[in-house]
Image (tube, rainbow, N blue to C red; front, side, top):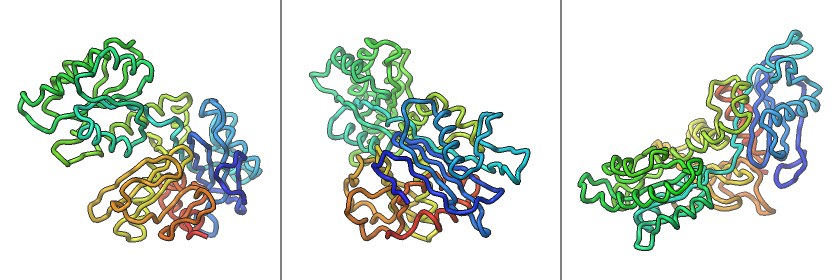
Length: 397
């Protein structure tokens, strides 16, 4: 069996006889690869019957990529997975015995780069530092930042924004304080930002997320130009040493998913799937998997890694506090402050290089198929758990 990883060649595997009914097709779209697998009831239990993993192609529409993936997997199995007449996955068949249809089609997709974000804050080591933590917990990448100082110039900021074209701009600063006198710095910063944004073409104006003193929100909104699309979230630093990462991280993830939905063919993918929208990102599905696996095995906490091609995601769930923490890092990197998370126990994706997995790892899905199989749990929880348990999340070899 071929191993996944840096190899540019497609990989596929066929595990055994294909059952005639109850088949679940799960597919995922990532920046570096396409993947699809079939879950089949075999001997009263769902198993991972077949899969195909291919390098991501050129900029063809997602619909074309999905069609090709289904055609290739079907040809390998000598089974029809695509309905040419209806132009979609085969969900209905006039001859279910000789040409069994699919029962469910489940899709996960993270088909674009991370969200390009620019930070604007009052201070470099307080508000900006807190906002950087939120970016690291979300599908975002920092492309620039400024803070309020005597050298901050609206014209220079406008030039930088016009050159780098961030997709989102985070404005933050100020502790939670209702006193209007305490709002003067953030109002000044918003005015300088507004002057910079007015110099940009309308189509270049990024989404703006305000994560500062909530009592100053109305004044900040009034200062910004009319074309600015503003949303507000909980203050990322409401008091000294009280960082609130998650609301800002969630807002940035929501913007990322909105950008995904605008990609050509994405809406059609959602129509082909048999689950209600929205389509989960691969990373969202992996986060849910970590929670599921913790509960399934009666653990107090669990740290897992999704080793994607262009981004690695660490997720650690704490059952005692009912919280989930996420950190995106560069491939082959560990998250900062390892003392703040439990040992790594679950890995989905190829482990780089000749070094062995950490001794703490109990489950390793070397193919990286666990997130899309976990997404199938929305259609059939038992099918997902059975395939994960018996075919994917296995003890390291």
